[in-house]
Length: 437
Image (cartoon, rainbow, N blue to C red; front, side, top):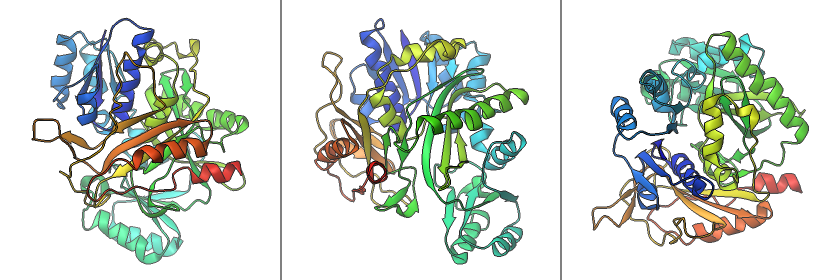
C-alpha cells in the first residue's frame, strides 16, 4: 500500500509517522511526504517527494497507484487540490475548495455561523481602512482584528489599546503586510475565557471526534507576546468535560456539518473548531480550520492507538459511524522550538545540534516521545547536517501519566537540543496543571 501526505510541517510529519505505525496491523506500506522536511527524510519508511504543484501531485498519485492522499496544510486546500484529485479519480481526504472557505475566508465563516445559529462573537467586515478605523473608535477596546484570508496563523491581532487596534488595521489594509489576505478585515468583539481546540474527522455525513487538545498561541510565557502558529500543546484538554464535549458536538460540529449540507457542499476532511469557553460556561467559535491544528496534531497523533489507515478508509468510504478511535490514557504534551526572529522574521540556516537518535524504526517498540520536524532541511554538508528552515522548527512531544510528568519528559528532551537563537516557552501545559488544581 502506498500513501501520500501533502505538506512539509510538523502536522504532516506526525500524520505520516502515525500512518507508518500501522504496519503492525496492516500490510506493508510506503508513505510519501510532499515536500516533507528533514525529519520525514530521515524517518525509516517515509520518503520525501519534492513536488508541490497540484497537477504534478495528481500525476504522481496516478503513476504510483497511491491508495489515498491526506492533505495537511490549508494552502493546497484553498487552491482546490481535493477537487483536482477527485476529478482525476484519485482518493483524497480533505474538503473541496468551496467547503474550505470555512477557513480561507473569515468573512464567509462568520456569515456561515450566523446563518446556521453557531455561537460566535459579534463582528463586522471592512474593505475600507477608513471605515475599519471608524468602527474601532466606535466599539473601543479590547477588540480583535483579523485578516479575511489565509495568513499562516499570523492574521489575528488581539488589541488591548486603541493604538494597537489602529496599527493592526493599517498593517493589514494600508501597509499590505499580509498581502491579499489582509485586503479585507473582520473585526470581532473580544471574548473572555479559555481557548480549546476541538478536531473531528468528517466523511460528509458522519463525524468522528478526535482527542481534545489545547495549545498556547502566544510567543512568551504566561501567554504574553505576539500571536504565533502555536508554541506548544497538550492532549487531552482537562476543561472539556463529557457534558461540554456533548454540547460542542451538538451546537458546533453537527450544526456546521448540517449547514454545509444545506448549502450544497458536504464536508469531508479534518474540521478544527477553535473555541472560547467563557467564564459562564458558554461556547463561542473563534475560527474554523479545515485541517488538523499544528502543534495539536503532534500530541493527538502521539496518543492515537487505533490504526489511522483504517480510520481514514472509513472516512473515505462514508462509514465513520461504524468506527471508534482508541486513545492512550496518558497525557501527551508538545513543546515547540522556534527559530530566531519568529514570528515576524524567522532566521534560516542555523545548524541543529544534539537531536535525539530516536527517529522510529519499525523494528523497535514505541517510545514515550517523538521529535517532530516542522521547519527543518538537510544542510549542504554531506546531506546529514540538519538546519532551520522555517519559523517553528521542531515539536518535542512526550507522554506521561499526568500533565506534569508529560511536561517534565518533553522538556527533558527539548533542553538537549540546541541551535542558535532557539526560542522555547518553559510553561507549556500550565493551564492544564492549574485546572487540575
